[in-house]
Length: 101
Image: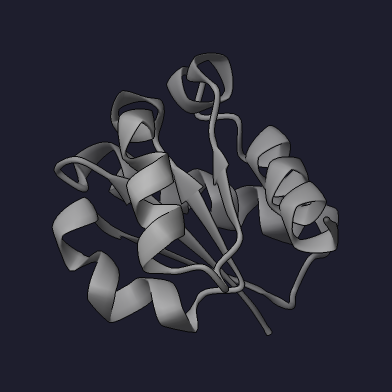
């Protein structure tokens, strides 16, 4: 099971995004993907367990700090278009590129 963590400021928009990601996962047959959304304040609790951490565009300024705190974690920032359009398939593709390096 691959755990994909979504981080944002308040957790509201990423919570909605999880539903779309689950729909896209089912459509693409990616049954081994699990999604979780949380706030940047909860990062310590969730980042260490994630295979990839996708950061909402509005908190991309936190990327370098997160990379320093969690040097073993894999991070990517969702671009404004995929995030704003709630494009589950594009976000899954981003997660896969990040996991595969």
